[in-house]
Figure 1: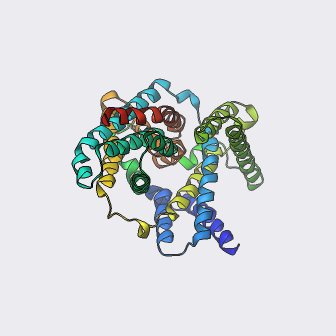
Figure 2: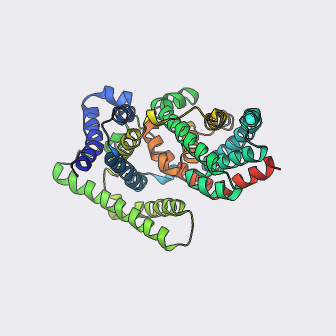
Figure 3: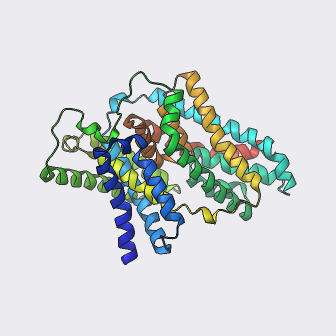
Length: 384
């Protein structure tokens, strides 16, 4: 019980302290609170401070707060800036990028697979599963694996190496994502330079604590109701991919409620969403234990996955430049396809751009819809 309480205080207290310090010391905001939290989380997770019960708390907290970040951040968005055409462009660019690098990687690493006694058919199954999860997210891992009958030992390899590479990918985005995008896609004017203070940019006076606390509590209450209703719908509907149902329901309810006057009057919803993103990042980083990573067997699978993840990002940026797709949206689309839509708010916080949340989530949901089909299609293409 004491361990649980201390872990909760750690997960919710450190981000709160850091956000308060960032307002006093601008250097924290320039470095990015998310980067600092990742460093803290990686340190705590690898020096033996967290036992098994504390790790379970981190897992449960990350699963819960990610459901609250989406409604809180969407309730504060201005949908007049949304371009459906741009979101579709970003989706098809992401789709093509993942397919291109997965197919190319199959031929590049096929020789290493044969040297490791992995059959032609089994390697095609690995390609199929990778296509499914890097277009449709991790929920498609099990369905595609079963559909192509991937052997259990290869399933464990793919899922383990996927955690390593996507973890490194997240670290890259958190530490260097904003610099990378601003370097490749320079903007005339940096907007939302401090995303945590956007709510106060309208010239409204800061709220007193008597109004601040009820306002934030009401925002969290609305987010909890949205998440609970969405979870309930996922249990009622006879659809196997419950994660997709929850995300779709949360997004829909959040958009609809954002136009309701009592909800529109709530201030600071985006700030609260950002706070929960920070909690989520700290929890996820605390679960990464580098001592548990075994890289000795079937390294070609690790290389293949790394090639697919980082290669698709390079291709997306290249086509985004050619097709004049917003760089922020390109990165949000990449994270939505590879890591799944719940990670989009984290990218929005890194880039300090709330406008990419809804189109980014939309790209990820489209990926959910077609990931299984394309994964099986790749197996039929390469395994024949």
